[in-house]
Each structure stands twice: as structure tokens, then as C-alpha cells.
Amino acid sequence: MGSIHFTLHLDRKHADRVGEIAASIAKLARDLGFAEVDNPRHLVGAACNVDDTPEPGLAWVLIQAQRQVDNQVLVPEEIHVVRTVPGAGCEPANIGLSRYVDTPDWTWTGQCKTRHAAEPGVGGVENYVRCHVALCSLLAKLQDLGVTVDVRDEVGYWTDRDAAALAERVTAERNQQAPFAAAK
Image 1 (cartoon, rainbow, N blue to C red):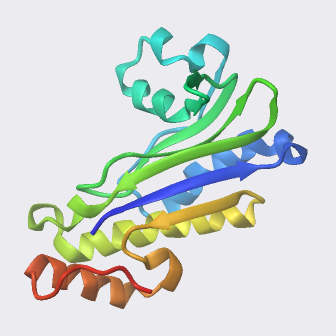
Image 2: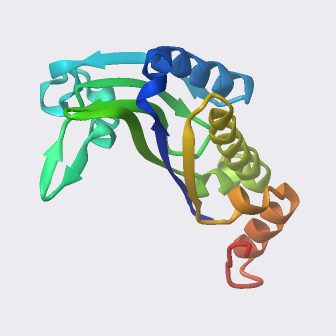
């Protein structure tokens, strides 16, 4: 059933809108019915370093914000991020934009494992489809805000946008009636 992996990019000419975009991420996630949506966070300087954070809940956000280039870990100079959880059984989906030394553009790379949202104890296939579709919808709406969005969706929904087919694929996998195959 899988995960959604995404990369966001905002050109430097829109740098003055990063805070506004982070606020929009939070509003969109709430409007889409995400189970949890934190207020946008703006971190600068040492606050962007996972080694310096006193907040255990912020550690995963800061780890995701780091980049590895030529075997070196790069810590961003500035981060605007919203921690979300699409629904019961999903991992957190941290969505934001970061800026690094000598790079005027803003980027973010994240992922969210949605597969456990299909477990019967948290809502089953219906919950999974709702969570997966909501996260893809939020990422799609970011494009309307000028953010370039690249998505790798292990179950193919991002490509075909067919919720009924998604439910069928997930149901087939859960029932082990057929091997899982992403939509082509």
C-alpha cells in the first residue's frame, strides 16, 4: 500500500511568500480534514539544527530538513514547516520549505507512510483512501501557490487520481487476492 514521497521547490523570486505558503499549508490541511495540524513553525539559525533542539517532537522535522551533499550533512539556515498527520494510522507528514547557505531557493523533501491507515483498527480501506487522497490533494494545491511539487506515490494515486481504483488495489492487497501493483 505504500508511502508518498515528495519534493517541494520554491524559486527565490517567491521567497517573500514562504511564511504565507506555510500558513496556507496549515489551512489546506485543516480544510482537507487532516487528523492533526500544528501551527506553522518558523525556525532560524541554530534552531534549525537537530543537535540544538530541546523539543523531542521537533527532531524528526529537523532531520527531514537536512540535506546530504558530498557525504556532508547540510543544516538549513531557515525553515518554515507545518507538522501534520493525515489520519489515524499515518505517519506524520511534515510539509514545509527550507533555505540553505549559498542556495537562495527554498526546498523540502518529505514522505508519509499511509499504509497503516488501512488497518481495521484505525478505519480500514476507507480511512486509508481518505488519508492518501487528502495528502495528495494538499500537495496538488501547493502547485496553485507557485510551489513546484514532485511526487512519487508507491500506489499510483498521484498519477491516476482515481480513488475507486485506489480502494480496489488496497482491498485486493489486504485480501491477498492479487499481488499489489501500482497503477500504470
